[in-house]
Amino acid sequence: MPNYFTDNTDLLYQFDRLDLKEIVEMTEDNFKQAGLFDDAPLNYEDAKENYKKVLEVVGDIAANFVAPRAAQIDEEGAVFKDGKVEYAQGTKEALEMLSKAELMGMILPREYGGLNFPTIIYMIAVELISRAEASLMNIFGLQDIGKTIERFGNELQRQEFLPKFVTGEYTGAMVLTEPDAGSDLQAVKLNAYQDENGNWFLRGVKRFITNGNGEVLLVLARTEPGTTDARGLSMLVCYGDDTVKVRRIEHKLGIHGSPTCELQFNDTPAQLVGSRKFGLLKYVMYLMNRARIGIGAQSLGISQQAYEEALKYAKAREQFGKPIYNLPVVSNMLIDMRVTLEANRSLLYASGIWVDKKEKLEELVEKLKLEKQPFADVNEKLKEALRVVGLLTPISKYILSESANKITYDALQIHGGTGYMKEFMVERLVRDARITNIYEGTSQLQIVAAAGGVINDVLAEYFNAWEAQEYKGSLSHLLNVLIEIRSLFYESLKYVKEKQDVSLQEVASKDLVELYTYIYVGYLLLNEANEDQRKVFTARRYILDALANARKNAEAIKSELYSDILHADTILI
Image (cartoon, rainbow, N blue to C red; front, side, top):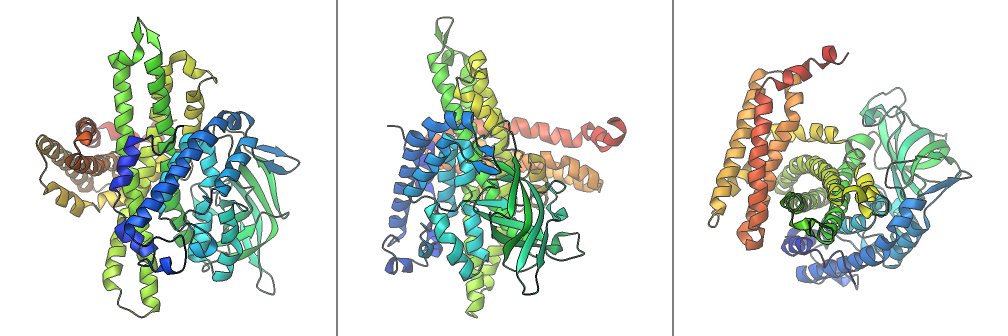
């Protein structure tokens, strides 16, 4: 029987080399939890083995239970009837199976029934589920709603909501977007008000809400009358009861199993999560970091399956007396897909580890403050983690979602005309991939989010350290290539800064972000190749391609190409 975890050699390679010792020690409270819970690990090796066993279960369910239902889920879709949303039958069955396997609380604490796993392990599970059926990830992947309540809610809220997230009785929704407030969340207007007893209620409309029919809704709302910016927004939690009307669900190009709802709140009882005025400034940003890598993992899962389908078809389809796999123009496409997958997995997993570090350091700083213990050293590590996460999560979302669109496009192309037909899986994968570079922040907004960190060169110390390392044999040549790409980046950055033109900096940000990404991912792959001979080909192919692309990016910045864009208001009339 297939298993999406054990069958994927690159995924196994990345899992085996994950260095989670510091993260696991903090997650397990230096393994003190072993004295409280029978399923808690005794040491790091025990924890890593436990993660592997659970991921094998996820891989089995994904390949043998979820994937066979994917076509039916896509065809049936979520249905809206008589004011109620109903999942496709295959979605219901998959959620029931995942609940029985105790996988719906992977990142929630054990005291509420969860597995207490690090984010990076959960992201691997998200990748596996997404490979099987991308829209299911949009329900399974909403465990972050419970995580946000655990992180910022009070103990009564944790006890009220978390155990039923774990059992699968509750699913959640992140309720942010409004008809007039899409990516510009500081423009949110949905009103949160209090009665004479201090109880909170919600009134207004939200749109494009993934799984808006969920039992528990985490809502961004305006709690401060008279405000119009982010400082007037707070986070509240409520039930999707009769006061929340689902006005409609969207009819979408892809991810049909995931209902996207328009919601009307009619004086809905709610509870404040955390402190007033921090809804967007703190809590949504926490959610967004997790959502970005979550969509990255979804993109990677879709991409992996598209590659597998293209490879299988290319080996089976004969033209001119031989499989099209043997045609160089086809095999080259497959090689590019494989290299991109491995590079993207390295990027995603590195980003996921940094998210874990950031969150655990935040918790440690808070704990030391409460205990009135020194925390300056830990706080410095936290500041560094915040800078790196602020850069890597938008880069990961941008790179992996754009790659998903390219890989699925090429996979369909390899199928030829048959790929355009619904009888072949690749047609669905193309449609499912298209949303990944749109929701949770478009690719263009990810570039905006990453630009500051790129301009401030937040990874400089890591680049310097890697540049000073010794690399085996021909890898030293690849090191020189990365040094050249870095030089191109600094030349381009210097050019933009010297112009002292904010508009130019904004227009050039895409090329600057891509240049910086080539360097970072290039070093990730180079270090892997230095450890394992099997990774040399991937590193070489990626880095040499990156140099060609870097020269294009640098030339675009320093040429007159952008002069037209800077005057678009007069051209696009």
